[in-house]
Amino acid sequence: MGQIAAIIIPVFGLIGLGLFADAARLLKPTTGDALSDFVFTVALPLLIFRTIATADFSGGTPWMLWLAYYSAFAVAWALGTFVMRRIFMRDARAGVVGGLASAYSNNLLIGIPLIITAYGSHGATAVALLIAIHLPILMTLSAILIERALVSDGLTPDADFRTIARNIFRALIVNPIVLGLFAGLAWRLTGWPVEGPLGNIVNRLGDVAATLALFAVGMNLRRYGIRGHVSAALACSFIKLMLMPAMVFLLVATVIHLPEAWAKGIVIAAGCPTGVNAYLVANRFQTGQGIASSSITITTGLAVLTIAFWLRVVEWL
Image 1 (cartoon, one colour):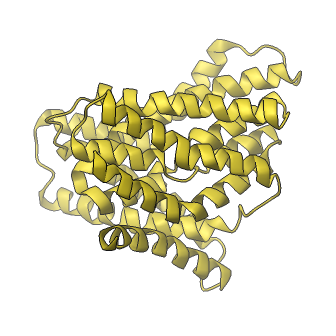
Image 2 (cartoon, rainbow, N blue to C red):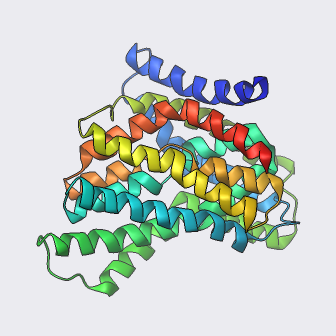
């Protein structure tokens, strides 16, 4: 229990400090957004660049890691959509939001810091590999499902697939996280070490990514809050925090064998709170904002307990 507390307290303590700083107005209201922008555009891309460029891939294959995680991801998304459409009787657009809230983890801002704290750089490699296809899959799937939902709800005519594909491609090639991933792969192929003055800059900025990411999550948390639709949000939260990591755990424990740090890391990644993309999509739809906002807040609050639970469970792997 002491080891789990040593992981949980620093991570969620930083989120709590960010929340307190925002509530007490110790910093300007725009500070949270500024920190998030810095983390997303500079610090995290450099951390991912360093992780990919220097990672040890011996003993594991990314294909098996992706299969274990994204099989559970797909089931959680489908289940969240089903619950929203069939149980809560919401429209197709809210179904997409429910799927996102049930499956999409905040691995960038919470998962990476948490797994680095728990399992070090080898665990961070697992998360970096997830993110390598997480963003392209999420952006592609979300764009397609958004257009289908708009058509299903009678709000737009059938979308042009080429236009959707072109928009997705443009968004990906300018995304800082994607650029960091490809830069890390390119650097890795050269065989050059990440050291010297350049390495020093990368290390210094990469090292602050986890701390600032968690503090920024706390500062921005109050903007979401609990905005009604609590029953629907609780259903999505249960899928996100319990069912999805349980599915990943069963796969890596029985069928898909991975290096220990990778297996533990992706279970914890699956159990991370809902990412803010659920709210961004809901805002784009102008429906389901309450579900997304409440899911983000509830999962972030409950994750203090559920992550502690999964940190204990993965020791059986």
